[in-house]
Image (cartoon, rainbow, N blue to C red; front, side):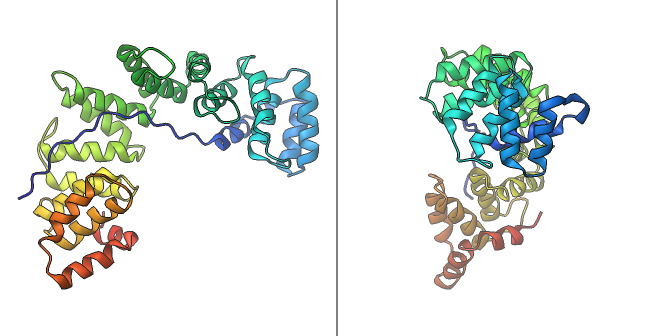
Length: 317
């Protein structure tokens, strides 16, 4: 039997920000909170009268309305009715951010963090994330925590990272909840019960990293009674969202027949899918699984691995 070791990789800060999301935040505001020029501009934008909307937003933005400045920054980021112009987007977001506009503070921070339209500047990213965090933005708190954890733009400070992760997690932020779970596992001594609690909160949002980590705890019986069926259940959910560690973990369960029927073909296919997607451990795992397959079954497993959606259907829920 292959040993499926307890692997909880150290948390790697990773933030993927879709700046377009910020553009739609404003439309969630009740109409009563908008007035005058800004309301007229939003109305024109909803009607896809982009030139008119931009004209009115610019008039209002020059009068100092941070909401219109934010909207212009978002419009120029997307190139909505105009040519994309990240420099102008930065300009308008900065104008709004300096007036305390939360979304612009966060967007500006990510622009500096990623070097999008501005020279990459982690210290500026931290500055604006601090501003947004002070306004209780869970996303800003989480992103800032990753920077404190890694020492990006600030001196590395695990205590401050923990504090920020906890703030965001208590606002029901799934990535921060997962980070809290990982920190609990890595604690000396590990706090597995606490880790289970955080991962359970995060999986309620369908977050794949937490699904995989919760599966690991069920597989190893840490913080919960050992239960291979539950481990397989959570690995499957994470696999279907592309988590590569979960591909390997579920592959081992199929290899060993733990919590699922033993199936070398599915085991190999899961390993190979992860291998093709760049997982560094999956190649060796697929090689081991392949050694148990006669030539005809190996051909079948290889063909199956080329159709991930078929594999995901076969593993079920």
